[in-house]
Image (cartoon, rainbow, N blue to C red; front, top):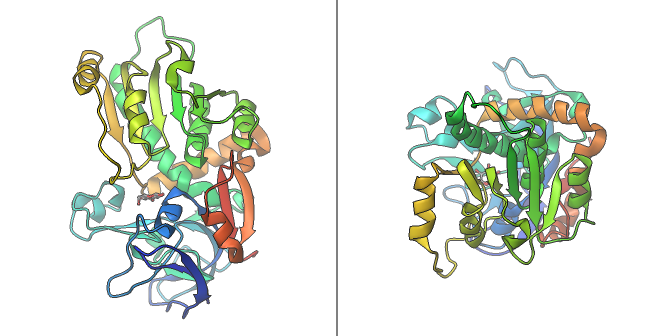
Length: 363
Ligand code: BGC
């Protein structure tokens, strides 16, 4: 079968033939239809991240996925050929209580693997084999957008973390503001999905990036009633405004500290971007920042990955996005390319692009 492989920490990706994986008892064979490409994939292909499976130099890339079941091994129930499925990403460490409970996104040992990222082959190949525990069945009506379920699952978890912090304030004393306010930093797929999710939840949403309004992301934000602000010159453009909830989706450590100053009293800053660890250190006014965190009851929460419960939540919300805003959610997929054009897509995303998708098999 065809597979797109990387050899971390070397740069580059190569499309070539590899043997199809073996269908062992209790597993399902899936034909990959589509894979989304995100910053993590680009980092892996640039040699900055990623780890091959033990004893091998190469890793099949790809973790955002959509496929169709083509074969089930003996002992598998609940899946049949033709089913549309999305596979989760992380596989448990086999040691800790969270992984034992299929909540490896909260793994305590750090000894987990992630398909397409760390220690296990991913999905940018004609086929993969997986256990039913890690497969989420998708309604056929969501076929055209289900490839964004994995990034949405990440958003579902992040928003839930923020909401858990804000729940400290419940029940809210009167008078309650007409709309709670949220700031989203970054208008890639994670930021835009957070905008959809928080608009659904009744937040007044402001999303910042470093572009004008006339980009696919800017237009999509307008379509769902979110405000777009070009913060290319810094956060001063926001005036004095502070927010109850901030979701960060850029991976810029400098910006993380700047965002903290935009957090309102009792608010939550949820970080989802993964900053590069090798950047030179920089100065922050730490005392002042942390003093305000204490005096304003604020919380800074990191959120990574998602277990299958968040995939199930995402499926429910994808259907709700459709009901509320029609086909708008599909506009998040700004480009589709055949797998052969992987090099174009793995290079820097085009301005305003939200989600680039590689079509592995059309059906
Ligand atoms: C993936 C997550 C993963 C994280 C860290 C993200 O791009 O969506 O599933 O846990 O990278 O490796």
